[in-house]
Length: 69
Image (cartoon, rainbow, N blue to C red; front, side):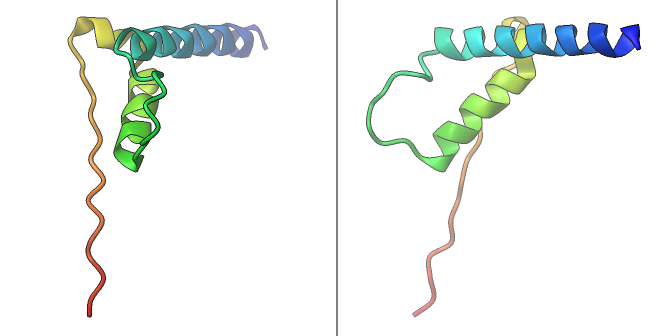
């Protein structure tokens, strides 16, 4: 029972550190034109947590195919 509580606290701290890393990179600036790639990059940066300060720089690309004619 105690292991689950410790794990939850560690997960919250991990995600908070990821949020701080995303903030430091300026991902939360409101520039008006958010794409799926930007949103994905923010989410992956948050999930990467403290690894961001060890050189992990996750980027997401969203290549949407053109509709056929």
